[in-house]
Image (cartoon, rainbow, N blue to C red):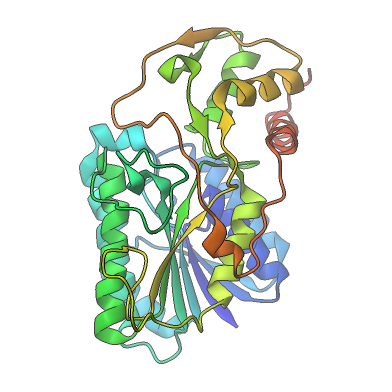
Length: 336
């Protein structure tokens, strides 16, 4: 079986590529390796994949360019796992056009390829818990309304869900959108909280703790996430809902579905920071700040739907943070 994984040099795409290779798939990784963050980190992820398994090959391509359709026609994949995106809530406040091009135009090209593909069984794509926006009904369920986004990043991801539904309806494409909840782990992005906190503590600099430390997050370890991605991709014979509730945005009479993918157990941000301090054997200097625009105080995933296909997150924040710190110290050759 052949899978195209977009964003393969990125954080989640790197781990997902390894998972599919371990399961015997031929993996074609696609990434433009842009300069949103340290390109050397992206290249090192790619180098690992190229030396990890002979069934991996890499194509440096920009998904927002129409050339990608011709490339995919030559590859003729059985699955597409779309993990390429312009990520980051705060970055979207300053550079919204980046998100339109990377998240909307790119996904449209994948759907345009899919509508005529004879080989493609399933498209799985990354959405986000940010689509729940102003909703304060916890835990967040796929059946909840998602019409009140709080920032443009969430708008682009919700747009992906609507695009997928329209193409599923028009062309019979099977699509699954996965709403990720606060993914963390080794080889993470440098703009993520765990990375920023670790770096600042080691450098004796204060960490920025927003919402005065009162955030709660459904921290989900990357290995658990890729287990869910793999299970979702291979579960492509799901049935459409003949008598579906049209008020439920996750259900449809066509071959389309939305699934939350988190741990299902929100943690206090302060407890997360404590785990970092314990592993670094060093206290954090904390700069308490108000909640940032576009942010929410709590995220909590209802994961009952994705558990029906075998998803079962295993990793506690204690173990997950420990694994990240071990990787960070090794990667940057730091002794404590």
